Image: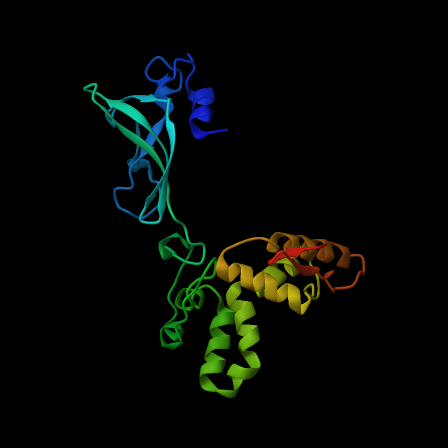
Amino acid sequence: MTKEKKMWLIADSNYDGIIDRRDELYNQLKIWQDTNGDGISQESELKTLTPSGVSNIELNVFATNINLNGNLLSEAGRYSDSSGERSLAADIELTFDSRITTVDTSLIPDYTIHPDAETLPKLRGYGTVYNSSIAYNVNDTLRNLAISMSHDITAVATQFDAFIAEWSGLNTLLRNAQEKYALTTAPILSEMDKKVWIYEHFIGVDRFSSGIEARINATASEMKTGASANVAAGRYFKSNSTQRKAA
């Protein structure tokens, strides 16, 4: 179903192909203008149609396929302002790279910069993984690992895998499962599942991670009755150049 059809069904209560004052939801629809450019909708940036100068929105749109610097203009239509002048309304699908990590530290509860963190190596985060300069301040274990590695160059070889597991959030996931089910030890993942989960979090996708997490929780629940801590390993294979999960 196209976007205009959805709007037609939801907001065009009199089915005339135009959203205006005669429709029940007209006064409830809002326009967001990101005036401070932070990518977060705030109450002061949300306005109903009339204060925004929008008199009506026409639902008869046409499909397009126009590339705008990598962004896609996929649909176009018209709206009228308070003076009756008709202008272009468009659906633009913005390019999104899930690998790029942007974090507003003001949104992290009780975020505090630790003096030690300022002296540690700064590594760029990707996907859902914070930049290390931020992660050091929210994860004491990660910060202590980094301190240990910075004091002993040989520790880089012996502790780097543990550092990546901590930085990516994998170890936190396992600790949370242990705490949730009041276990004496955390569930144990296969090396392949560890790598897959970490990889997906660094590229910001979830093809297999949710399944891995479900198996972690299932194992943790069963551990309460004496079951093994070893999480059933996922099976992966390649088909048509695409890696898929078999079971």
